[in-house]
Length: 200
Image (cartoon, rainbow, N blue to C red; front, side):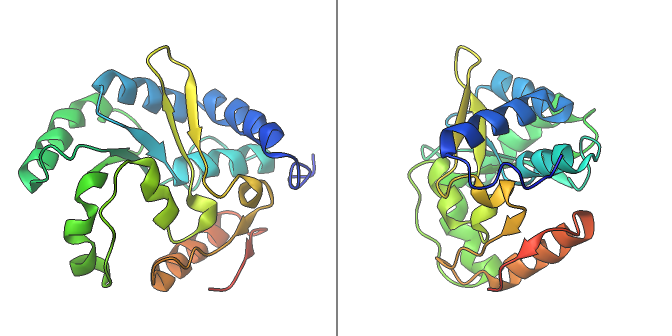
């Protein structure tokens, strides 16, 4: 199959195909089930593990190829302390310990407190986990997924899915994240050489 044959399709067709692929991926399926059981407020599995699964399926690579970790966001503005977030991370460690990659858990309500010191530049105070997707360095990476209370998938993709199905990395210049974008682009090209890289 031509891996680019799904690019340019209407969003709803790409959404259906995206969900078929990621929900069939054993690593993602297990991570979603365990994340749902944690019952964190406004949680989302985001970015790499999701689009990696699509690229892997369309290029015949195994589940988990190119995935260094799983990013799990939640949003809790009731306690913005480092200690509260660290407590959530510590309590969740055992639940994910036997997965083949680590799970990185972050309270997106806190990002504006530490972003400038780590990356330079200011970061807005967010109102939800999904809002964080709009500030990723690449529009391609801006995708999040969770299960609702009935176990149904909820997909968030503020820039759509065509970049993913087109094997294209497109920068998101809303923040000065050029270094992050170029580092991620270089890593992606090592794992999927056919990727088109749109310059920053």
